[in-house]
Image (cartoon, rainbow, N blue to C red; front, side, top):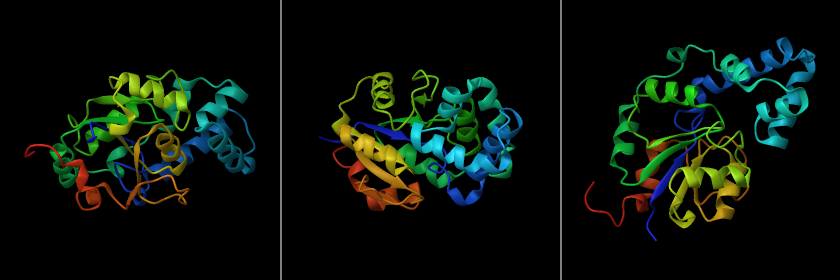
Length: 219
């Protein structure tokens, strides 16, 4: 079966982790937990890490344990000047444009942040749409229900024809169990045997996974 649908993670996948944006978002998360939730600053890093590892996102842990308002949290942590971290990437635009499959953003962030990132990277119009945590009723990767809802939004493609490109081994492992082909991007996390392919950057896709273009007419 040839590939039909590609799901791209957003942060640390569409752009390199070295640009500092995700570090800035994590800093905002910690400040929120201290300033808005009232957690001791010295305990915030371990609590945030525990929530992320247990629930898939810090937000989910804060909702469960502290009943935080998701809109308030998301507006706070993404209140950043993206132009300080991102710039248009014409080479990535060219690669994504050449891919014949349907392409979706599938992120545990919110859609407003995703669309801002896409715009600053010059990728507006490159995707069918954004599947964010609101679109899937605040489920999140790596929960199976998150993938099932994402597949439904994308028109229920056969998972065997789908590819997930993500920087999280845990997310890739869940996708692989569903039958996705998986691509670990940025190599930030230790491999859990979750990926079929690895790339330091999406710019390497034509060399690492030429099968994305095989079986189609000239694109």
